[in-house]
Length: 185
Image (cartoon, rainbow, N blue to C red; front, side, top):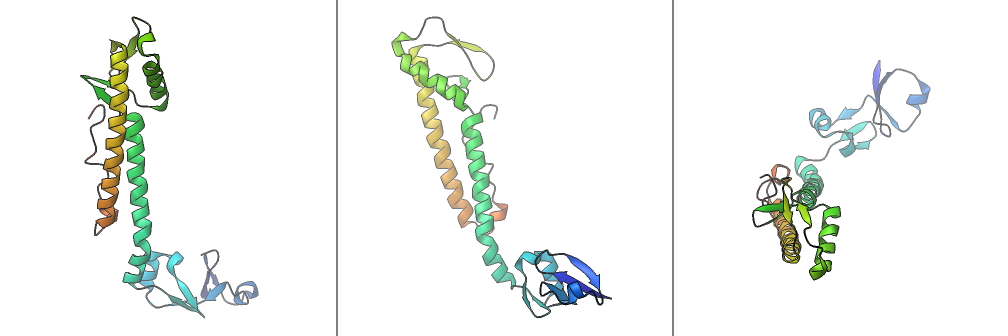
């Protein structure tokens, strides 16, 4: 009984004389690996074929191929944390934290636009659940804090990206520490 590998489906089977396998150029009968342990470690996506030979890249060639993929994955993790902190982390004015989700930001811009026309006695809920008296000055402070928070978070993400790209092993880069404080931290 021979083992057969399909280059397209990346599936294995056993065969001796099945003509649909033996005569199909997508199948390799009894493949010969240049390094079967390494081939199994990196997986078929990185194999090349010559006749019934399975050729694997060197470790250096494989690492060179993987580096941009690992770096891109790291950048995606950094961006996700950046965006999470921007929308869920809140921003602080005085001793209170204010919501930073898109809906809250829209409301806060509306408060700033009302300015002196802001109705009296508007109570605004903070992230802790307490209420504060909203004033035109407080609305402006919240808006300014949001802008500073956004710029700081963005700059931190760019610094983290540069550090991750410069890291000798970007797959182990710690993308979660070193951010500006968010509510509850």
